Image (cartoon, rainbow, N blue to C red):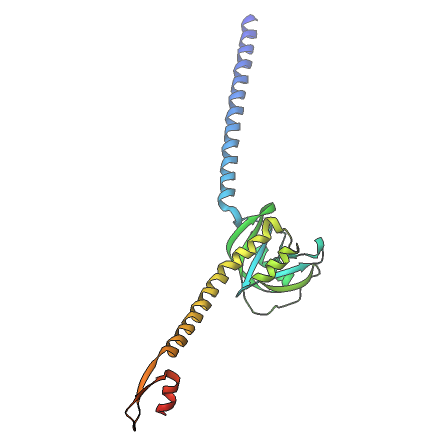
Length: 223
């Protein structure tokens, strides 16, 4: 009997040790799985489902919508995910619903407050295919100056966390256009200056004297 009781106690002790080892091993496996899942989530970033919107540019202007709620402020078209699509598809769908413009999603620009993803999107057509939905009172193309004015008036939704980025993104395009315009203007001024300073000498047929004639008058005399 003593031997039987000792054997049972020993078996129970061994069983408890094995259960403890199994629990430790299981917790380690769970930790590894969670770590891998978290790394994959970080690596995938904006490719998963998420709330999103589009930054749409047309020349030096950006597409903005005015809301019928939340202070009737301006925002980029965008909205909530349905958890069945990637964030880029959410941005495209919400832009169509809110502004009536069909777009294609390009590169991922920024993830802002609340995990909201902003994509650079491109127009499929120049004109909207439908009117805005009931949440939108106005669809507007804004220049950089207009964006800045609305910022000063406090009329942008999420001004501190998001709206300031629009000026930066518009500035990237605007600076290149201005550079081209300035170079063209400088070339034109340079050409005009060279014409004004171009002189020629004409010998008068009767007196043999010479006089200096400016470029434009030279053309007139030759004719």
